[in-house]
Length: 184
Image (cartoon, rainbow, N blue to C red; front, side, top):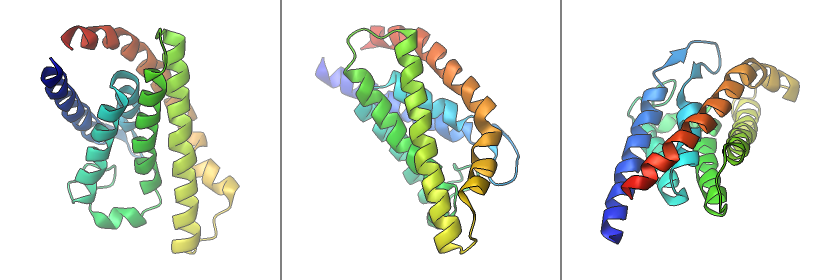
């Protein structure tokens, strides 16, 4: 029985890694950070999968991109580490893992619990993403961007999309979690 769960979790990790990859191609181009479906799929990963599976799924996505596969919003390759937007990719890994870990401690999962976990996830993604953006833009690239400029270009335009992503991910995962539990 344990082997079946392991195989099932590996398959889920691969599936959600693929969904995150596909999410980078579903985008509305905007300068600096295009709007994509990646965040939605990362939230789904953390809300639906056990924390270790969520980690492997999002970490695999990051590794595939760093190996050169064009799965990131603007391509792939090890040089992507020096792009200001790479912090959001790191945030994907941390957020999906933390959401899965938090939900593993909850006895009864409700829509509101999933919504709170999704809000936590999006907050983690943005805190890491903004910090990394500021570090690369200001220290590595020497651009001298103010915190207000960074918020205006990397956060504020995306708030409506992220609110929709958070609610949609919580709703879809609320319906999906019982279905996945049947297969374990």
